[in-house]
Amino acid sequence: MARPRFGTDGIRGVANGDLSPELVLALGRAVGRVLAPPRVVIGRDTRRSGPLLEAALAAGLAAEGVEVERVGVLPTPGIAWIAASEDAAGAVVSASHNPFPDNGVKVFGRGGRKLSAGDEAAVEAELDRILAGGPDAGGRPPRTGGDVAAVVDRPEAAAGWLDALAGSLDGRRLDGVRVVVDCGHGAASAIAGDVLRGLGASVTVLHAEPDGTNINAGCGSTDPSRLQQVVADRQADAGLAFDGDADRVVAVDERGVVVDGDEIIAVCAIDRHERGVLAGGAVAVTVMSNLGLRLGLAERGIGVVETPVGDRHVLEALDRHGLTLGGEQSGHVIFRDLASTGDGLLTGLQLLDVVHRRGRPLSELAGTAMTKLPQVLRNVEVRRGAAELVTAVAADVAAVERDLGGSGRVLLRPSGTEPVVRVMAEAPTEAQARAAVDRLVAAVERAAGA
Image 1 (cartoon, rainbow, N blue to C red):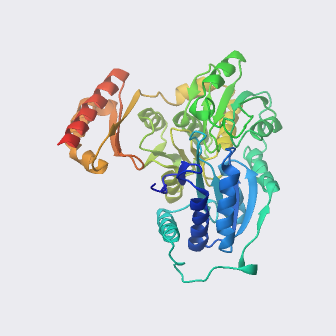
Image 2 (tube, rainbow, N blue to C red):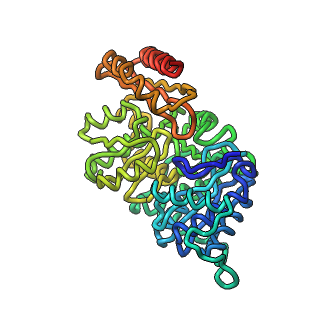
Image 3 (tube, one colour):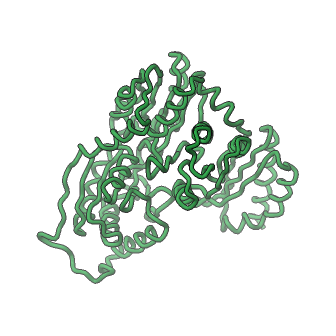
């Protein structure tokens, strides 16, 4: 069985299958050897396999002399915040929005930053060495006795992050705002309602009874249908749906219509721009963000920096260009002046703050911020190099782009995790977008069979 490799968001696999305790223990050793942090803060989501894999990760780190502090169930951004505020490293045992049988490990370097590609490659190489039974790359003997580090529980460490969430509103409150939150039976279950109520909001909480097996099951950001119904039925002002580790959020307006990450970014960017606090006068978004976002922001003189898919690339662009707002259509939004990674609760608070201050319905704010173009996405399974196939159909892509003119766009990219080419098109109508995708899928299939 091939072991899981680092992807755009850590390492994932079926818990106690390809993501075994033995593998996670070796990963802890590899992180301890390569990054050599003096201390790592560990959190997890609500999956039944969480304590098992958390114990293995902590054991691997402690065996390499790294002090370990276990915070317990806490959203990924909470661990990142603790790491950033205490100059520690961090790790989260979570498979985010994946279904219950999966689990994973995300690693933050000192300061709460995701690992660079170079650090990931070095950890991968050391992990392979350990699994192959090779010696420590530095030639060091195993640590024994007093050289083995301690593993301690520190659940109170979350308090600072919760205070920072409330403080992100600069003393403002959400009195009178009616909000429904869907916790997806995940890591936000025990805290989301309390954070919002503490700021004065009237809160209804859904799917906050994790049993170890129901995380993301027909709820949360991957399935907000129940949230949409409850928001509309209760005439709430908005809804917020988190994924399993609450590093992303999708919103629902007062009519029960989903407001995705692109729309959240647009609303918050325009608000910050009009208040004169949008650093650099621009945002960073990935190539998958809707063309309507770019057009809507351009109308208001707001620039867009485009990045490859993945929040790590967004974060790198924010720092490189001195920006403070960016993210992905999926709802992974980064407020760089407030956090070092995407934070679903923080994003939800920032969005509700705009709704409250502006005194306008979320549907109106989102609708005037941008008009989403129909977007069609299909995956084409391939047997040979996906990147080569994308290059091979460049002429077909150019022909479709000419036909669309400036009213749409197409994107072909090889998947970083699967043997597929992702084909996406946006156009003024869904029929046009589908026709463009059909042409390009046929081109890829012809090239693949050549």
